[in-house]
Image: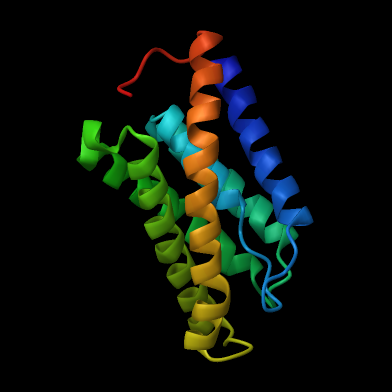
Length: 173
């Protein structure tokens, strides 16, 4: 693995963790901003090793920073699965997914999938502190919207920076 790529992926996880800390709760639940940077890392460095690293790293950081009751194990389950599903869909879509709008939409959809995996695993392992539908509507949907907008804004900026610094090669615009 390239050391520069590892440093950039670590910075993405750090930025996601910081956003997770400073993001105010919406309806009592803090949106998961780590997903945005996990998806960004997968899009910019699409390699199975990177996806595994990002999935596990995001799961651990989300587990360490969660305020959800007993949310540690569901985070460790949900993030690696979400990372590989996102990666698979990104590869299947190919060049169609290499524009900011497609990546933002894919990120929003995968945030919903991640939320369902998280809430589902929390429900089956420990039970939920409220109704599934209420938690989905109050936490997952706003997070998906925020992640979609954030990916749409941040992806072109970071891609341009990485292209100019010659860290990544020109990928389809």
